[in-house]
Amino acid sequence: MTSSPSLMPEPLDVVVVGEALIDIVQSPAGQAEYPGGSPANVAYGLGRLDVKAGLLTAIGKDQRGDAIAAHLHSAGVVLLPGSKSMGKTATATARIAADGSADYTFDIEWALAPLVLPYAPRILHTGSIATFLEPGAGVVRSLLEQAQGGCMVTYDPNIRTDLLGSHHEALSLFEEIVPLTDVVRMSASDAHWLYPGKALEDISSHLLSLGTTLAVMTQGAMGSLMATRHIQLRVPAVPSTVADTIGAGDSYMSALIMGLLLRGSDGLAPTVLERIGTIASMAASITVGRPGANPPTHRELLAGMAR
Image (cartoon, rainbow, N blue to C red):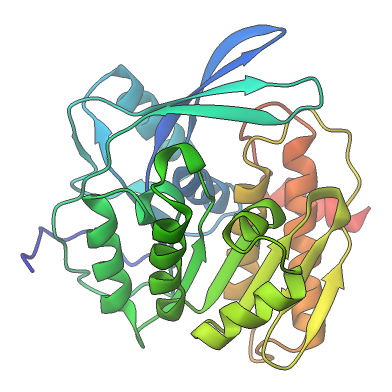
């Protein structure tokens, strides 16, 4: 593997690896553009929560790439060297239905140069298109292999079926990654797409048998399931009036990562999981209450928890 220039100009608590793109949102109110992409949203959400985070991605040296860089910078997120490597910045066109749900079409290429992490952050997060779409997906898996034993690895597959091959191919890729992780967070719809006909409890147990330590299944208004090899517990959702669901899962993921950073010495005890799950649910609730991928600040999250 070829070493790159230093990826991280300063020690970071969390490094996120994955796609950043522009969401072109079409709704009854008109069309608007927002910086997006699941990993970029997670990094931005971490920055808003005052976590020292950096994003390794592949965007263009164009106006949309500049907009993404400025967006990340506004939250204090470091855009890691080598991230402006593409001919153009990817887009995802989201059509918003009356119930606030979003249907996506993508214009994306995903490639990363072979890289060596100069040091291990406390948490390395990846997910979504970046872990399935070659040639970049192979580099992402290599980075996860480098991280083994050096830091916690978190993963959200965030399935985009339009960009995948067959179900068998997608499942095989997913199950190659799970053993390289410590935490897998996925929506119930992703879980049921990958494992049709299976209960979330059984899917969680299967992921734990593959080697991850914590499996988190989110079900929107129905709350979330958090499972380790020893316990399974349900955490209720925080009620919210939905503007749209863009970025809700990513906001949940950001707050989940923050909770894992702050959990102290109590490991994954039931009380710890319940607290982390409640914080993550509050973050998602705040996000769905306003348009676009607009996660809460740390202050907003604390205020929500105090109510």
